[in-house]
Image (cartoon, rainbow, N blue to C red; front, top):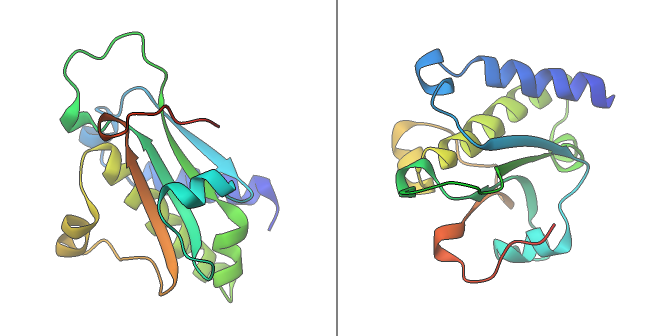
Length: 143
């Protein structure tokens, strides 16, 4: 799939976020990447047969106190891993939507267990969406 088409799918997924929530997203950027780096894979403890579909890196809104002069949180959406697990364009559309909403939920401080409870689909078997809470990390995230 062309990058421009993939970007439109991500934008469409972001447009599904209700205005009341979208207006509260602050100091966060959405990045489209071909594949995760080895460091990103290691940061979420991926095994050799697992794939990373998306990753949130930052300090969730629920953990912010004073939060000035800070680089933006990052949500990475990985195109090649998503395409590799989908058999059709319709599946890619749905997987992009689920991955984007999953990572945005981490920005709001919602963890994977709660996402399962409220029905935001977990990633397919042997695939991972991840979050790194910078308030719990002692070393900075390097890109």
